[in-house]
Image (cartoon, rainbow, N blue to C red; front, top):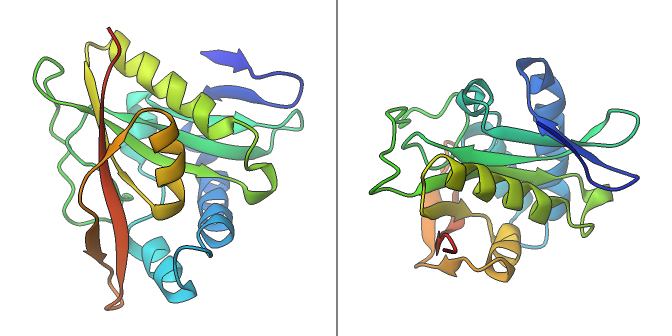
Length: 186
């Protein structure tokens, strides 16, 4: 799967070789786009425990990257068919068991955009691809745990916000996330 997103960007499935570039992108995105909604301490705490690369998504073929013509990765995001809703490989409370698409929601996961490439439709394109692929796998609904800056995109795309949650971070901080859901269009 590889899609041309116009003259400046290309969408493709992530590979294990992308891990270092993904880590760097996640740090740039979190620090740059999160600073209006979170403190620097919350962002650093989330980078240590809540944000990061989840290789199960890459191995499952459900994680995508957006590249510039020079091959720089400037966006990432995907969907999961496993129960884990968010977090990286180091998150202790992971549940990698499979979801039943007839009764459970696909997990929309780990969207990050380079601040220098924000507001160009990259997140929306990643979300469209994730939803399309999840529907093709039989899922009829989606759920996610949004960051405060991400909530705006998801609301524009039809997601409904639940009650905000305070997620504890390893350094004693807490960070606000918003659970969100959406039914797939019929």
